[in-house]
Image 1 (cartoon, helix red, strand yellow):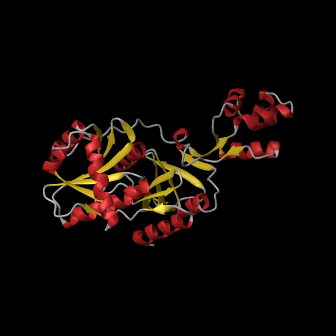
Image 2 (image 1 turned 30 degrees about the vertical axis):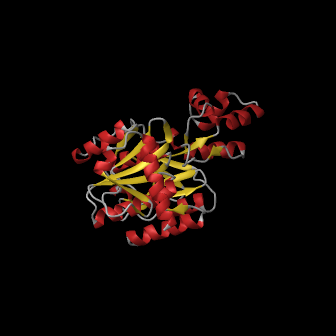
Image 3 (image 1 turned 90 degrees about the vertical axis):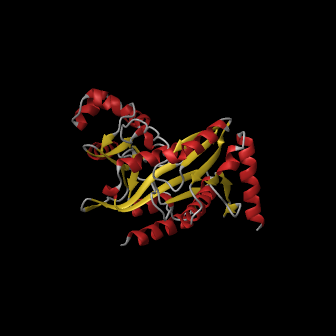
Length: 322
């Protein structure tokens, strides 16, 4: 299957699951392919045939964007090396959850989350420690008795009851012993922090030297500017006084490529519930599909975030009226 077809299939699946999906980020560089929202759940999705192509720089960018946009970054792919990704298993690459289209279908369409995740050393599941303790105590088994049944130490059993995860073999043995389900699903959208790779929070990159002047103006106006390296926009800017006021920011000469970026930014903004602004040297129009165009000199004259918000809002309204 071609990558283009794979992206189309995943997009259609998410739409069937009730997600609003952005246009594909068909421009380079790009850390993610699509943004999608269903209610409060916002995901940034990278779609690959071979997930080994997902490198550290892209993973770090997606994790940063997830923080800025309150979104879950994830990768949907077919295989790793020469093996297909196993169904209903969550893998992790550079701190980002990775799984197959079938797993995504079960999760988003069927509402059946995966139970297994891959980590160094094999496949693991989440043990419901409280339920395990209840089952053990209802049989009046000691920690030692259960440890002997499993062939592990008392300390290990105690850790299972405290929430430590277990291998698939141990989980199956526990469920056979108590004839009851004792596992809990991997919460891809909210709980993956508990099982993701133990990596430090990626540091922000430096702004492109060509963008430093624009960054300085936005900072002076009251925005925290988070530069990006592999996204359709140059930065994510947050109002210092209101973290929910988030603006996707671009900057370049106004060319056909810039216009394409602005359209993609607008589509992403509609899904992520953010605004977007593109700073250009000269503009013959006021917006591109709701992405406000602001000339560099005009931006330098905006003194605070409220003024910038007003400009963006007014130009987006003009686009809607048109």
